[in-house]
Amino acid sequence: MAIFFTFLYIINVVAFVLYAVDKHRAYYNMWRIREALLLGLAVAGGAYGAGAGMMLFRHKTQHRSFLITIPIALIAWVAIVVAVVLTA
Image 1 (cartoon, rainbow, N blue to C red):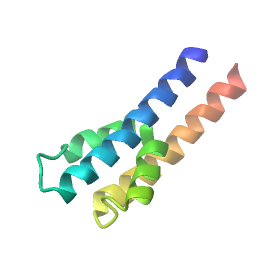
Image 2 (image 1 turned 45 degrees about the horizontal axis):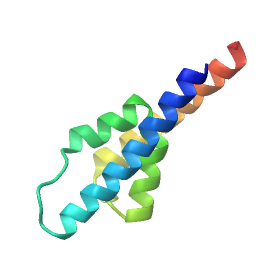
Image 3 (image 1 turned 120 degrees about the vertical axis):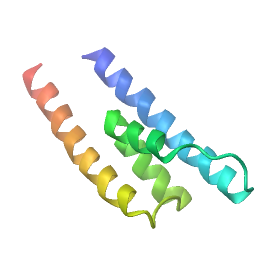
């Protein structure tokens, strides 16, 4: 179970940092991180970090795909974490 929570911690930190990097790059008109990667990280377990990055950096908050996918992924991952904890 420790490996599972370590994975979730790392992927959330990575998602949060990539949202910050993408916001920085958008501000300076630089090469951007693909939206598929940002959404994929959320679906793969980094939904909390992605959501926090969206809100803190005000990044991708007008994109419907992000406004739908990230909350759904967060709810799904909360359910997974609850199931893991209850079955441990």
